[in-house]
Length: 247
Ligand code: IPE
Ligand code: IPE
Ligand code: MG
Image (cartoon, rainbow, N blue to C red):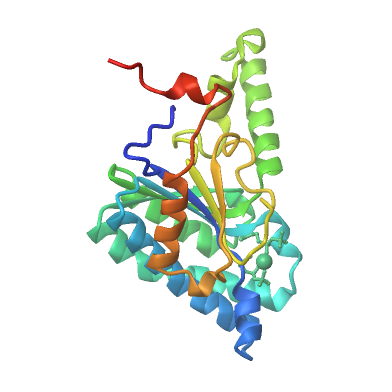
């Protein structure tokens, strides 16, 4: 799918929500309190994204590497996620928000899988606004999963390897039915992508915000969009080629 952002406003924004732990530390609170405040920031961002006219918002909530955190923190994050999904369902149905989960489903706790599947199914027909939730997500795992599915399709004779191109390949990614992100935001001052949407962000603009995720508010979101609006996306062309012909 081609990215098509009008009025210099992105159609799809993806966010690496980072800094919960440092926020908690700065406030003398346990890390989990930072995650709890982070969940509130998610709610605010959903509302801001809809108001600001985005069509897709993808949120990096849990990476495949995050399983390596202390057991108590992982468990607390899963509980927060469960509670968040429970609270969100009504809101999503009311505001016609579609949920898409990106990541390895089957390794998540069973009750969370059930809740995710149920929410995805009940919101599947909404078209105006989609929330992508990257959970147990890693770009490398995603590419491996795609490669396995492609190999199986080739074996089954439904895909011709010699004719495989990127347009077909991308359909096998978790994001197959979503446009690439126009803008990737990372909070907390870290300047890395941490295994997030590495293929999809090949031509995304990237905005690094100093704000810790629990403090990310509408003004921070708008600052990122203002930054995006100043960018020139050239996709390998020259700046001159992008200027409209003089009439
Ligand atoms: C982001 O905040 C939340 C997750 C990765 C789940 P962190 O927990 O990474 O916060 P910092 O980076 O330790 O401050
Ligand atoms: C990236 O943040 C993952 C999420 C935001 C879910 P991390 O805090 O896990 O990333 P690193 O380890 O600092 O790169
Ligand atoms: Mg972090």
